[in-house]
Length: 137
Image 1 (cartoon, helix red, strand yellow):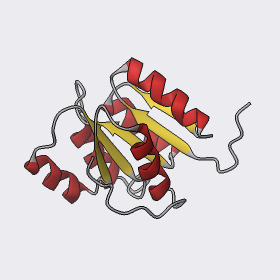
Image 2: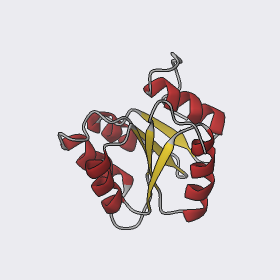
Image 3: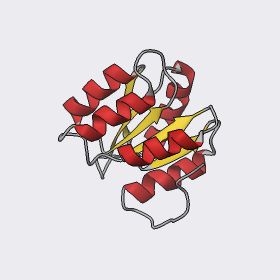
Image 4: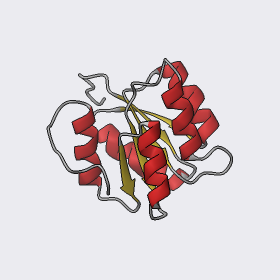
């Protein structure tokens, strides 16, 4: 049984089941509860229903992409305050970065990502460490 003293719930929204599996294991090893969604629409519904502590959101997904999902999450009064960390395998274009900042996405990280960097970003938004300069991966 994994000890979860802080009751931290991470919502992982990504269409890549292999990535979700690996990331789930690593996050659970940190003591986090992990919820999963394979698409943006399901992810938005889970976020509204379960109020996760933080959301890890893939940028490129079929159907509702990460940009649209992030926009809906930041417009909803139940999810507006939940930090969103966007993950992408495609290089972030400048217009995307501007849109993400306007929407209110807290951080972006390129895939494949360094898990230690992701861990530091997570803990920063969870208030456990103060680590500046990690917003763009």
